[in-house]
Image 1 (spheres, rainbow, N blue to C red):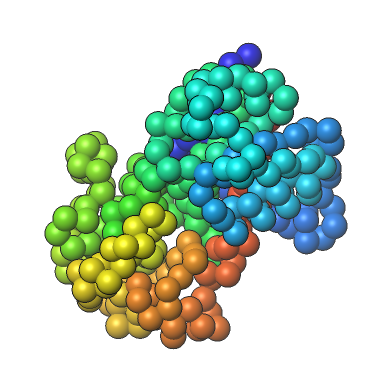
Image 2: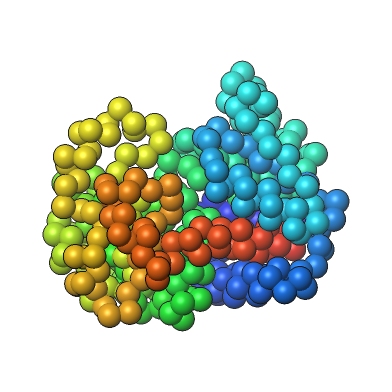
Amino acid sequence: MTARHFLTLLDLSPTELDALIQRAIAMKAEQRTGNAEQAYQGKVMGMIFEKSSTRTRVSFEAGMSQLGGHAIFLSPRDTQLGRGEPVEDSARVLSSMTDIIMIRTFGHEIIQRFAEFSSVPVINALSDSYHPCQLLADIQTYVEHRGSIQGKTVSWFGDGNNMCQSYINAARQFDFELRIACPQGFEPDAQLLAANSDRVSVLRNPKEAAKEAHLLVTDVWASMGQEDEQEQRLEQFKGYQLNSELMAMAASDALYMHCLPAHRGEEISAELMDHPDTVIWNEAENRLHAQKALIEFLLQAH
């Protein structure tokens, strides 16, 4: 049987994604009550990291352990991926020794090539283009606190980065409107915008984007690998901070999220980060539960 992969949200149907979110919520409850089953004893996950991580490593490693399996952490020092050995050869070999593989890397084409030659499911744990696992956690968090996100309005503030592009795919798959507030020159991929123009718009005025929105989301202004642009971006993104002023423009029951790590006082105010009603910490925890549901789905489909 051909392996199912999760490289973007488009790899699962809207129906499958909705079911996965509900399964993640159920698995979270099972874990907290001590009723979780370790149904995947003997299963091995290969975790390939070309980019450093805290939440991604801990959530996948802990999740695989809670499922009864084992995870092998492979840093850039531990593998030949893209460093002498072709990606295709690494995929063939590693997939012959493991049951599922997650990759956190730079170019999205690396994950695509790896998946093409892998005999087991491959998960995109972040590339420069997309971060679909974070979107599973974000949608789970919204559903837990406010119910279905279908038909709602979501506003993105800041860089049109991999998170923003995953929100575009999420708007399509979960059926909501997305407003992207970003400075000129920081828009997400033009083809992606064009393909989703029926539900995605780009605005320059953050307050206009926030008006009556049900969910407001942001991320760091300078992503990993862009640290040398930090000072310049601070100037360019002035006025795009997610703060109480923007929240006042949103719907009365609006939530706000950040995928972390955050630069307090830059893309999000410290006041929102420390607010007692924030769901950001719940959002971070949900990486664990959403990814467990994803692992289960892919292993069952294989």
